[in-house]
Length: 215
Length: 293
Image (cartoon, rainbow over all chains, first blue to last red; front, side, top):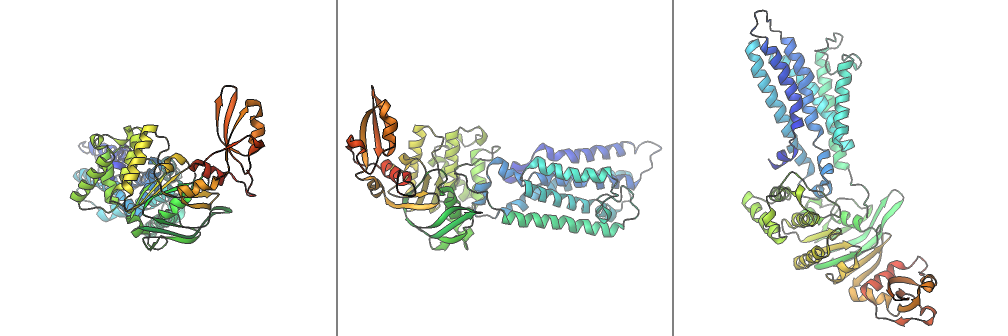
């Protein structure tokens, strides 16, 4: 809990709030007589914003010790740093899951029939890919704004190009209606990419040495 | 408790930070002296397992720092020269978190341990205050408190009195001396006064090489029969400086009293003095590679 208290900042809540506002916008129309619930609308929101919420939460974790000046001390303690990192990762994941669940509970009222598998397929792979990118960027830069910028740059690039330039590694082929991409292959590749980036970050973290001693 | 350093070498690219250093350290306060860039912090970081040596190793209570990192860290309390603290947390919360990172448990034992170290460094009354609001001296004290958690057998403190006022400095030195007992306390500094009042055994590093290891008296003897006091008018000061290494100067009216280290009586004007620890240190680190000043 102490680690969670340390790492929680209100910025964690910004992407989930955007998600909540969009969901609210859909739901507030659900009482109108012309309302025709469309699952694709909801899935778009989950594909575009839910992954970003996780990635931005992850970006702040690694640079934190360095920015607070605690890195050298932290590494001198017996408990492996990697273990702490995994524990800290549970905070953004938990927040991400909570907001997602709340959004879904709200949306369920309007849609009644729901394709859970499609929702997971659309939203979780880009979340893993963006979180992996965020973790690697923060391992390399040890700087929160830089890692946030790198992650948002990838997300923004995909949004701006309509996910048409990255082929089978496109982040949002469902929302952007990129017909030529096989969704299943794309989803598997995104999960693999995210896990590879995360593994690379872990190896780098393990091998990272303190900078040359300044005396 | 016993630390044995064996032919320890550290290279950063082409720079040699430590040159095949061998040293034995027994229980009590041990001083590590040396000018900036001597390799003290590198040695500390290797002993704390934060940096791997290029070659050689060190045994801490018989455990190799290259192979038994986790076990070594369990014996260790470390206070680096520069450190920050999680500013959001209170002293109590911070130390409780660090205690869990050090593997101290269960919660009841952790609470007792945190209370013990907070009282030891006189921060018990400030335990609920956020450490972000602490003064420089209080931050140093919380720094030593985190090092003391778990009652470590080896305490490594790097330039602990930097930035402290004289009163805090004395208090800090006394605290370290009280703590030494049957544990090894390695105190790294470039301030001779810190060592003089607390360490019986010491080593001097220069440019990554071990220049000296022994007692205070043996270090002072490095300057035996080489310490002179000379009174000169101000205009002759520059000429006098060429005769040896000036340790201190004191103005006395029109004259300047100069304490310097030289192989021979400078211009036959000097009065020979008994060497102090600082003289011995200056005699060692002041020599150039050819043995001159």
